[in-house]
Length: 250
Ligand code: PEP
Image (cartoon, rainbow, N blue to C red; front, top):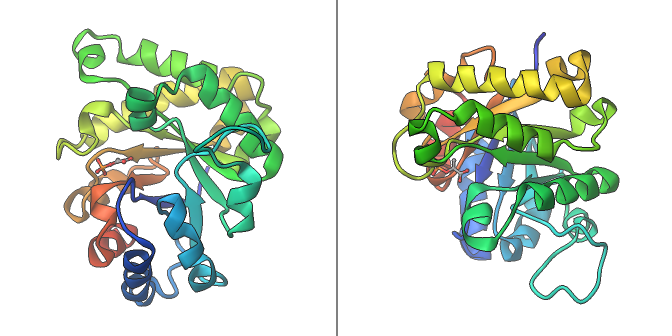
């Protein structure tokens, strides 16, 4: 089964609107005509509108880094799916480990966000992954199964084209320690098997599972050439146009 790979940039809390525009000015010519993989940039909220026009009708999509599940209301600091759509977003990252670690995100709230994103028509990148202590304790697969089961609770296989799961081992995020292709592939197989329980076998075969954690131009090819790895979520190395373009073109 061939699945088109998705390379998504997670800019975290980096880049003002002006810096985002400068990035895109440098990046678009480097990936012009690249259709082998899907490309998405997820800037901080305030920098999204600066890119709406610049990325419109290009081969690079736009995404949010989070969203709340309610449509509107007294939820200070939050944005809704409709708000992301209104500024040209097609994608949204959900349940990133930094959201789980610092902002109280749980498996249950990730599931609520996924349900709302699907209802609104945004494509979600749902992040799961074990922390170092869990890997060292030998419970990585249990953690991945639990996170996957909870994230996909109540989600039907017919929506499989509208979300991906990003396997992001927390010990590899921003640390320079990349999972080996073997570690990533093993984890992806566990996730796909668990996804089949929720979505059915056919949909699970169509599900794109991304890897994230210290992807760099130097290791992108070894990871992305694995059939089981359907793309990457890239943090630090996506902040520079040349480096992210090199990853996209692995
Ligand atoms: C991320 O933020 O999702 C990520 C994988 O970061 P980094 O590439 O910097 O490890």
